[in-house]
Image (cartoon, rainbow, N blue to C red; front, side):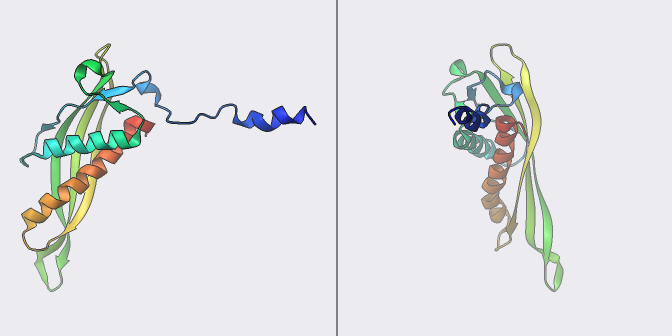
Length: 164
């Protein structure tokens, strides 16, 4: 009977509690996130997107956000490439007027290992949302941008946090 007890617990021998980093992020514990560059014509979207990614990194918990570049193991550089608004539903009875839009935000990002200067990850992340027109389409678009940024941040952090 005593010989069976080790066999019962041997199935748990390879199990780890907590986050497991992808191989390319090995040795990176802290990430500095400077303000992203904005290649669009939408003002102040770079601060909103950067803050959203920082919050997502903190929520994910795989990495810590460094308070300065000096204390970081890696730097996450981002560039907001585009924000595209496409009509998805017209007003019933008026095919010229749009009732609902789809919005896609694209961010190109790189993760650079500070010790070597090596780029360990270099990808694009996209986030999308939809919004209804309630009056002023520009104001409705401004209110939808944080949702697209959140969707993009989730994809980005999943890619370098979990490797997918």
